[in-house]
Image (cartoon, rainbow, N blue to C red; front, side):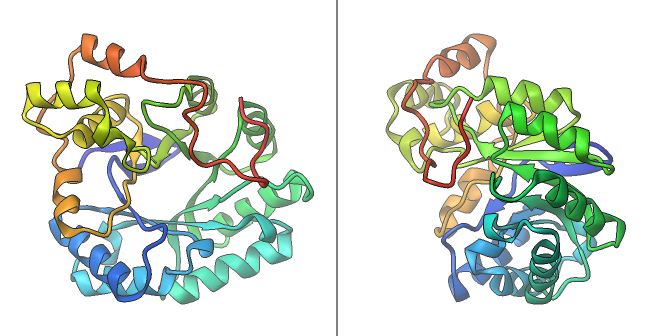
Length: 272
């Protein structure tokens, strides 16, 4: 499995996102993904599915140390004591002694970042997380977090797809030694109806969604597409047997527009 290395972490380039997957469906999708060859599963306390994710990992029969598991602490639990409780709760639900990557899910301006980053690093030092990082952090927040952290921050998970220009945040993340993971990498299905992605896909014998994912991984951006359909698991995984040309990469990058952001709500930071 191809991977990105950052701060001592080796993060598989494609994983299964599990947002909105629940119960038996979630457990089945996780199990099937791992059996197909996925070695990266992404969950979060807020998703309410960590038990099912853990069940799916165990049912796959693949040794625990071969699967990279990420979870996240929610915005309301960023005070140090709450952060530690949330992390331990997640591990109990997953039935794991540690996760491979623990992230701050969303920044919270009402809770001092210094305390949150301190708690995050403590989780690594105590062995509850092999690696730590952030999610939905802006350029300014990346700089603040990097200065506060006494452990390497290895990843910034952000909304990232061709319809949204995230170049500033990507540059800032990499400048601080962080990998970038793209959630909503197919833009919640928008990629499938795009004429440019469809045309380029036909030239390679691939779908528009596969082109979208390939565009990201070809930039060494980790992708975690979510699906509840077994057939989509295989389609999303089949992105390493073709390569986009420089002209195609450039044309896809031009799809970005000012209204391309999908995930934006009252708890969002001031985006770059």
